Amino acid sequence: MMQMGTALRDDVAVCAEGAATVGTACEGGGEGAADKLVGGVQAAGELGLSRSEFARAVQLGIVRAGPPAVGGAARYARAELDRVRSAESPPGALRARVEAVAGAQAAAEVLGVGPTRFTRLARCGHVTPVGYRINRYRAVVWFYLAAELRGFAAREPGMLRGIAPPEDRELMTARADLRPRRWRGRHVGLLLRRTADPWERAAVLASVLPEEELWEAVPDPAERIVLAALAPPPPYGHPQVPAAAAVALSLLKAGPPEEVHWYRTSLDFALTGARGQSKSTGERGPT
Image (cartoon, rainbow, N blue to C red; front, side, top):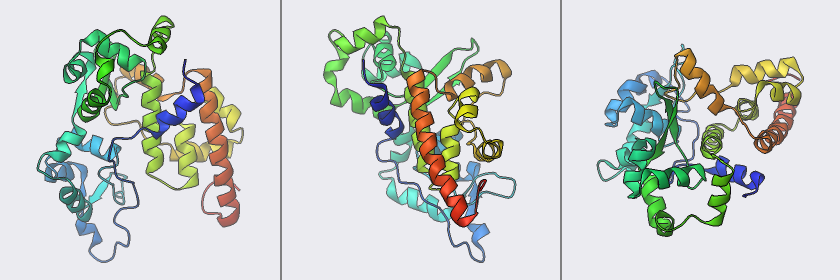
């Protein structure tokens, strides 16, 4: 069995291959800057993407959001859209980067294997989901980046045939399923890349902890209020129907004790930095 701490570090580091380092877009503003900002629907259309494809491009850090509108809606600088268009060539390259397939059957077809083998590869952590949806039966349907699946097939052709390695057989015997944990690691890693603010980074880590663990990790109610206010919203496609939302909510929270411990340790470290910033600048968070 893999060591949990190492696996979690790897999970949080998972990002789409070639995703841009996220900085602050559209700084400086100036007169007329608002005229250079567009909403998400218009930005998606100008890049030739559907709304879900555009949301995935933002999630992966390929497209960087600018200053939000007064109501909090995301906006995008035209300069950023121009940058993405110029960087993504030939035509269709951007859509290929964000193309995703849903479910084991579709993902298996990309790899050229049967769905049973693909499910084993996914459950054992060889491929990492990029998103999810909850179907009408309240079952989780995982999304995978097609480009990552093709890359895996090229790197690991031996995994596509023959018997499972001993590590996989051990995991399957234990009925392990690493997909939720691997997705959480990816999700948290991408969120952390979007900000350098210590309190916002702490809020990302706090959002993964179950409530009782968060209360133990952050006993100060004032700090918990700050972390809750800065918590990231659910990912694109998170269901609104209560029954489905309850299933999806379980995906957003760390589960195994070792995973919880890793995020608690990371949160402790992040809070140390955030508290230090507050004491020195008073800009954010309790002092």
